[in-house]
Image (cartoon, rainbow, N blue to C red; front, side, top):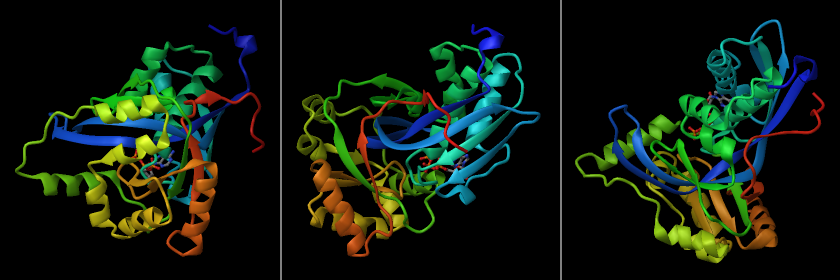
Length: 312
Ligand code: ATP
């Protein structure tokens, strides 16, 4: 436990976005969630969350898509902070300042990243020093992707995605993301379309594929490209056909692969190296298929404290 005298006045934590290299959806469970087998990769697009002691609980949001993020009790970062306070027997209120770079409602788990960042920031601010397994349990209670965003790197997610196991992965992968299609796709809508499409069929218990594991061990982007897979892709494209056009154009411009990220609508495009990523980003914007593109590499580390405070 840190001595009270050493506690910082505020703590800033950076958390990454994720891409699902593989997302297999199994049968619905008794709790209403689908059984999932996914392979996450944390990528270098980040949100920063600064926790500061305050008279009352609250949060403010700046940066990309800030106007689409709630600042009331439904904000996932605030919910995470409160859950940690409850778990540790009550703490002083905090104000969370969220600086967003991760597209909102894009299938890149931005809200979950903010929740993971808030947990790490508040734990340091309050000096609660909660053990890693307990922090992961609180994270899982906030959302299925939150434990992975504490973890980072490349990992298998099982259960409903919240049971995270690191995988042996080599290499650095160059990605281009096309996020700005219409106004986002809600995860429940995409799952509803999946349920409708698969009604009457028997869904297998999902498992990570040996082919993806082997490609990750090789560290070769060309080996990874053909084994990327997403069971929700057809449903996301059905709801937003423009997603399919982005995928087709990216492949036409020389992408190694293009896939819907999570439940979409962001398209994750795997490029052949850093130069390939720049070329794809330029081509997709120049031809008008993408209004906005983001480039990032992965894997990167999970939620971590920044040594210096971002100028707010
Ligand atoms: P997922 O794939 O995990 O369902 P997503 O990446 O598609 O999520 P998010 O950016 O996490 O989408 O946002 C989903 C919804 O969550 C938003 O529409 C927003 O209203 C709500 N939300 C709550 N807290 C946050 C937050 N801190 N940042 C972003 N969205 C938040």
